[in-house]
Image (cartoon, rainbow, N blue to C red; front, side):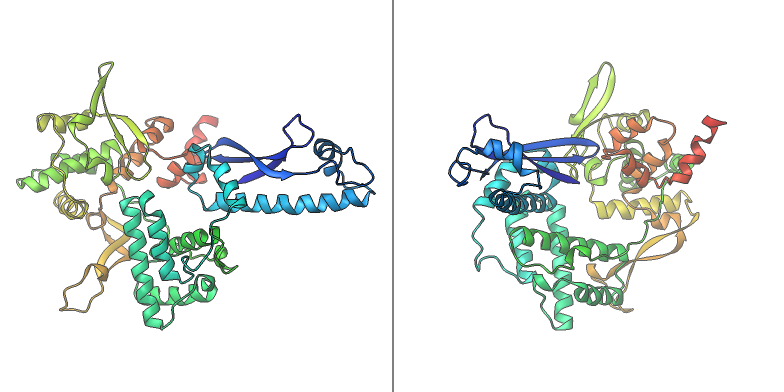
Length: 436
């Protein structure tokens, strides 16, 4: 939540107002300030008081609404209209900005004010067609987007193209409303896209529309309130006995042994596959006799320093100080399922399994796979993310939560507890012993 304050900061009698933006991110408060071009008063504006300065007006008259002077009342209304315009411009820009960019860039507010006074020319080069604006968005934002974010944007774009072609309608940006949502969800349901997948697609469409709104392109008033309820993800993780079974499993194939070592590493370092699959010995350093690994998370761009556990060190010793050979995420997913099957990790669990929806006898394409809910043996539900979730779940309550959050890189304790699916009831039960 962000708020705006206007201040008269100068000792001069006639000077422009300052604006101050206050907001909080991850329980940390931020303040940015800049100067507007709004001078609230001048010497010759009042026929009955030629000496009333901007400073005197702001300090003594602007916030007092009981003045009987018609000139003062008119001036109050005039100034309020302009202040509201500036406030709305800044808050709209803030809602559409990448928050981390705002917190780390002290020039952001000045640049936003500059766009208020010198808005970009709105001409035919900015499309109002949804698909055309996807291309415009990728062109303008592509350089600052991660490869994965760019890939996800293109996936959603192609899905929307197929949707529009099927219903025979091409949507404008100002047509992204409840009618659009109803048609899109009906199409997605028929093709068996999961609610969470639909939710992700809608979120990206709304991001596109908010960027268009920032550029002052007309957007439907229903757009911000559009929602698709998602499914709560299943909390599948490997417990300590299952990790031991995987560690002690005899494997003759080199490629499976390589994948097994990566799986064990992920269970003790708690990182995403996009990060741990890049680990190599050059990232390791020794500080006060303790072995640490330093890297930059691909998703969050955070610089991380985390300890190497003894279990990970055993794998490095096995491999002459090196990490296992890097493999692709899809291969890793397939290999660890086979490893867990051999380790007899076959407890029946609720979850989602990826299956093909293509007709029997026809080789499925990549886009023909869907996540289907059901009850399956646990090994069937294992994916590359299970190591990170296993780490967070298994060590919760054994290691101070602050340390765990520092290793996983979650932004807050609330996000971490939600990640391991700890409810208020769970926390109350766990804290019961301290009060009895």
